Length: 284
Image 1 (spheres, rainbow, N blue to C red):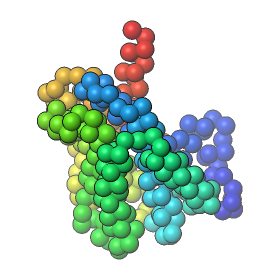
Image 2: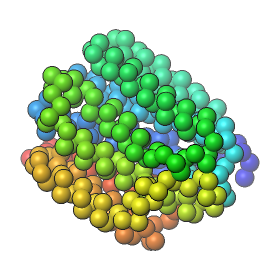
Image 3: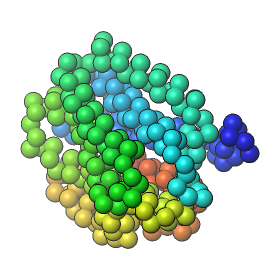
Image 4: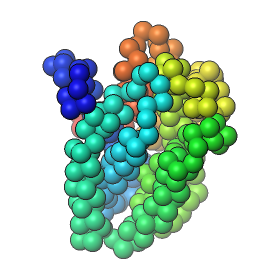
């Protein structure tokens, strides 16, 4: 297979469900779904274009991250579909990044409130700092700091930011949901990073940090703790948190029966629980 062909697992007709993961669409969808559910649970009215802007911003960040990954050689004998796709089609990824960036810029100029734009620009400083640490420092430093915690925190801030601003910057009712969501994202990232490192054949210098590996080893206990926290503040959001915690634990439990290329999509699918709540609400 040449570097210009579509990876075989993506060319198979039955593998169409891998394309969202390969194109990094899972993360934007997760962010938009949880933002919608949080706004519903908090009885907050958002600018109708907030979900669009959030989805575009998250998508751009993930595309940029994978494109920067292509500047480095593979860490092992195996790479997940999302990384392999951008390595073989970085020109397409670059065009996609430019298009998404232009759409996000137009959205910020013409459709969003000024406070949301300011918040997004402030958060972009944290994202730029994260990119600098990940892509400009030696790989061996990765094990020394909790990368997955940083990703989960930034993802939570981005997802919750517009709701927090629309709620009069009242942090109290958002604190527990933010903690639950951050822990779900941290667990998701830790499972994916640990499992993929274990099968990639990468060196110890590329291994996830100790905290991430601990989460992967103790996924049942972590999921149970998240479920307990979610139940402390009953709401549709907490129900989704409970379902996603259970789903992540189930994926971890059945890990051996899931093909390695599907582990990341399966772990991301566990965070789609707001979609079930939306479906149930539309039927009532």
